[in-house]
Amino acid sequence: MPVLTRLTPSPVVVDIRPGALDDLGAVLADERIAQSGRLAVAVSAGSGARLRERIAPSLPGAAWFEVGGGTLDDAIRLAAGMKSGAYDAVVGIGGGKVIDCAKYSAARIGLPLVAVPTNLAHDGICSPVSNLDNDAGRGSYGVPTPIALLVDLTVIREAPARFVRSGIGEALSNISAIADWELAHRVTGEKLDGLAAAMARQAGEAVLRHPGGCGADGFLTVLAEGLALSGIAMSIAGHTRPCSGACHEISHALDHLYPRRAANHGEQVGVGAAFATYLRGEHGTARLMAGVLRRHGLPVVAQELGFSDEEFVRAVGFAPETRPGRYTILEHLALSPSDIRTVYAEYVTAVTG
Image (cartoon, rainbow, N blue to C red):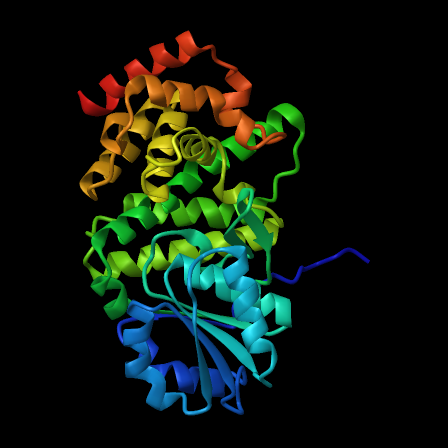
């Protein structure tokens, strides 16, 4: 008997609209996520604390926990604090650090996680990964996909615009990441999951082709949907390949080589994606991608990230070391520093001329 279908790990609720946060209590009850109302809610000291005043009356049975930061120790302390309560679910309300801590803590104590992001800076809002700082730097920890995702566009618009811009770079980088995955499939025989690739690619293409700006509900909805689909694509694949290729290798290299100067993650992967696309010979697509980044106020060259051309060239050369065993256009071409310097100069001319 052939396998006709497969189970896809995904949230039972995805609610993206203005005012979605006001219905959090009703959603949890209606979907039988927390019928008793016993919730552990993790928030930040900043925006999360302000939101607590707004929604606490609708969650009378909730216990509130403040997340101190985005480290593994923070997540372990959060789990220890929640462990003593008989909760139905964990709700994480805040930015990436809060969501990642809440995801890890919920997994540690065996509870479902409801993600309520207050910005759209990255694709971790619905991913099966928690990125947490540890004694060795930063680690990625596998966790279950959130059981529900609520994105209140009114709250998103209140966050600094740079967070939306970061999410744009993250979503667009999917297009480059999928091209790298397909390259690895052709050259090395690496298994390619067509469904995961399709979801991640379409998430990136939707953001690439949308004419709206960062403050429009229509564009923010497409961006939030794209980031959610990216997370689900990683769950389907069982790894980050659908959303991480040479673009992320370059960003990780910048983080490693210049830890005190690294720019916003989404900005770095956006530049990395446009440059990697140019390296593949897809010059028209690279120019299109750079044009969209520019339209939304994101960098397209190294100097706009705060790095010199030579520093960027060094990072591109070092990038394959950040993900041993991952095959991308960087590993495929194996360019010398001189070659990287030449092609980067050509890229700069192409996207700024």
